[in-house]
Length: 259
Image (tube, rainbow, N blue to C red):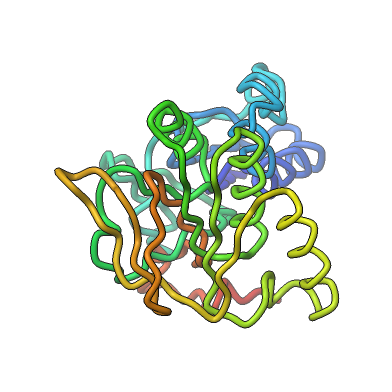
């Protein structure tokens, strides 16, 4: 049996372990678009805060692939799945045959049509490269704007406040974490974060990121205010990654529909 697992975060890694436990002889290929061994994305904010180093974020030993007899293809992206011929096509041009295919690609940050957002100094926080980029900006940063107040946005705000930066969170909804908590919990959480020096603008969006010679200098908000900042964290939501399933019989909505 030939197994292909796309994605090497928590779901993909646990699936590999379960497959190998059930089938000791089958071939397992693990494909991931990042060139890294499996690591914990929830720990990225702790890496930015300086609470852990990079060695602590990996969720399996360096021998994981060898121990489970897995062929890793890291740093290469799946661009197409041919479900009739049963192979996946990679950006590099490689084609990998499968009998069973598991899609565990997770989600990517939503891009916003905000003038000035494209360019240096703007990062989500959903990958190790994002965390490294944020850390590289810290020596020249005093003020940070976080767009979005979901879990990633708030953990980013917390991490950068721990670093001693002036942090402002902008949220278009009427309260923080609007899809994850009730009103009372949102109010309590906001109060605690404000006591720790984080500022909030609710019912507000970002109209423009201001730049001078390519460098971020501030942001204009929909309420007419201007926020000085040198770094922007984009945390306004995530979208599922399954564009490579287009043209297959896979059923998709906001994710892949399964039995």
